[in-house]
Amino acid sequence: MIKAVLIRLDPTRATPIFDQLAASVRAAIIDGRVIGGERLPAARDLADSLGVNMHTVLRAYRVLRDEGLIELHRGRGAVVAVRIGGHAALAGAIHDLVDEAKLHDLPESALLALISEAYRWTPSAPGVLRTAPTR
Amino acid sequence: MIKAVLIRLDPTRATPIFDQLAASVRAAIIDGRVIGGERLPAARDLADSLGVNMHTVLRAYRVLRDEGLIELHRGRGAVVAVRIGGHAALAGAIHDLVDEAKLHDLPESALLALISEAYRWTPSAPGVLRTAPTR
DNA sequence: ATATTGTGCTATCTGAAGTCGAACAAGTAG
DNA sequence: CTACTTGTTCGACTTCAGATAGCACAATAT
Image (cartoon, rainbow over all chains, first blue to last red; front, top):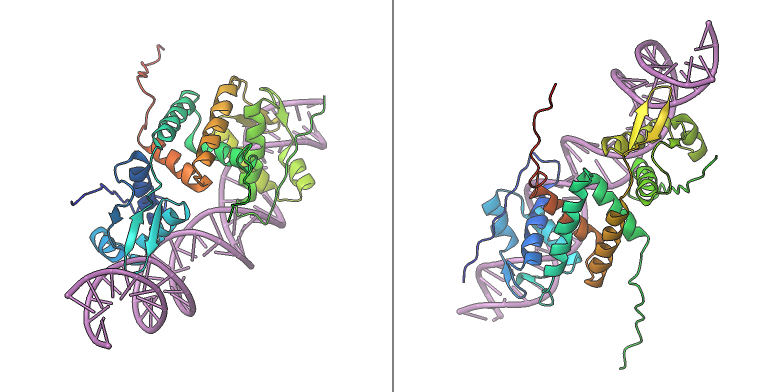
């Protein structure tokens, strides 16, 4: 099965290309438009069809890998992580928060900074105590 | 009444100083630790006591002004906007979302990017039609 | 009047970020 | 085993953001 995911890049925007690309794919994964196990196009191919350098695509892929959304293997390509799924609630919460922020006329940058700050003050998951694995 | 707001700057962090400073003050405003009408220290003074350049402080102030959180006036200083208040719900929603994201092991950068993406697709407030002001 | 305080401008230095080219290594497929 | 595919690594280059500094200026407060 051949799937096409709309990817729109705007070189004039301040956001770096690899970030725009990562954002597109990330959103597709979170929304469930691409499912776990599915393979993304090879970096060289995607780079050609988008008119950008291979490294730029690879960097976007690496970002997603560091976020645990995809896996990268030489000769095999980029594959969406299988444990992905059920993020629908999170997607909904995000949209709700954005709506709330706009209601208060709070700019995007401010909301992002507030979230970043919130992250800083809850370094670890609350109430989760991991025991040693039984070998 | 003299008030002291804890401000912690770390030059070694990747986040620029003016951003860290803005984040500190912003959080204090949203949380209600400083109320509308209250005056912030003069840029020169704060710069001296923090060991940074005046322009750096001024830039942080300008950021907060652009976000509508404070007002700047020559000779008068920086004053917290009066219309601020009732953001407690928003602050709560933010913390909830962050907790949810951590539950899914989603890194900070990914969450920020997702929110940025969400902002991009709802450019205007929904259902708000501004009529021309009656002169 | 005089001191205070943000604004505007120019200039400099440093470090990081983004993009790219070429060679390389791990895996796949015949 | 051989050839091909695909991500990885190294190095280089260019551009830009952040921070600092100094100075003159304008609006406001006392």
